[in-house]
Image (cartoon, rainbow, N blue to C red; front, side):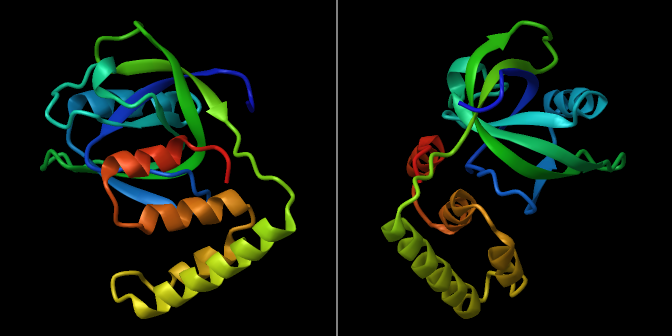
Length: 190
């Protein structure tokens, strides 16, 4: 376990699992008042928010049981409001994995949770180093061959210093079921 527990406003997302990849800005569209309330509190405090994926995308508003217990702690970079439209743009940066210890009943306007930030387990292993080097080269080739991934992704790939961030970047691009992406997020051992 890493740092001590944090109490953070929580927001839910549907149909995607986010990974903590520092220096990679993630855009999200925000439409729910509940999400806006959570973001406003985050921006008043530490500018951090917990992001959880909904198990049940039909639940509106989602309750604790509708959410996975693992998510990410993210830094709120910017919230671009559009008062003429109910769609607001949010820019975040994933900082770390986190596990919900319990939901707090501090507000009916949004979910608020006590979370434990989690550290990735990376063992010093020559075989792992070789696999990571190979993975980075394969990822570079995929970026070069894929028309949907911008060429700027190579510079992001090259800037990643932590092996777990490379694994998360690759996992974020893999096409697989939501439940499998969630299992990857919950795995701490690289």
